[in-house]
Image (cartoon, rainbow, N blue to C red; front, side, top):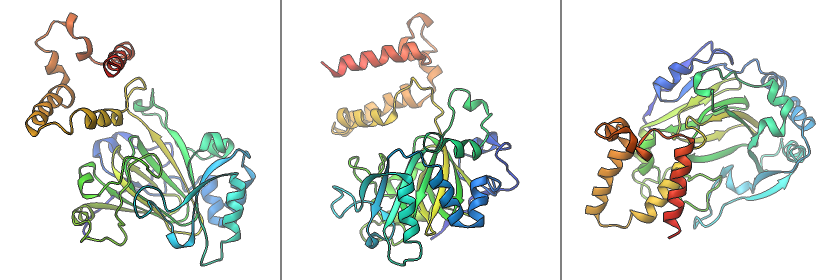
Length: 341
């Protein structure tokens, strides 16, 4: 498998992240040793048990969602054979109880796979979140403060998927491997159904670790264009919005913290809604009509917005003008009215 090299930046600290450089590259970048001085990372360096006990003691007691897979899934959380459900179950549990289950099977070769994913770090473990954070002082964060999430579990594989936010993932305990793909590789990654999805996002149905090129021939092209990022505890990884990524947690006990943020203003709509509406209203039209609509989308949506209004008096720009909170509400009302006819 031919892969792209992931850039590595050394000497970066939580308050010296070069956001301008990262945004300009528009590709994954390893931030070597970014969080090596976090208290949680240092505790994990002493021993996994030390970190496990710290997390258990900080548990608020509130129930959270945990994924639980039988030993035969080998840590790969995903679909059942028909893609109508999953190869694991979800349960509500206290974090301390999940950690106790992990500890009880720590030395067993055959064990359950447990995965607490996307827990709001600042809400579930607020004191620890405050002690283990990054500094976000770039203008991009003036209206979009990152959301910290913590991921805790045994060995696991989160199948390749994309997220709308940008992301900095921080490896706290256990080694992790990210296999990343640029957004244009979507057709080579064999996405699963829009519903159900394991975590709210479409994921691949292909096994990247054991690829079946007879069943998924385009997967070879994706793998030949993959970026591989291997992280040790203390390392960070930045990757842009919409990049596909498969995440493998390799050790018996693993912890990661990531920071997600959106660049769009909060009043703007969700592009996934646009995609769904496009499937409803455009996908099954004749090719000639779809080509015509593609030209309109390129003109009004993906092209230079200033050119659309260059020949028009400002008084009539309406929805063609730069979007603000008021015009977004008006457009949303217009759409609702049209959809409810």
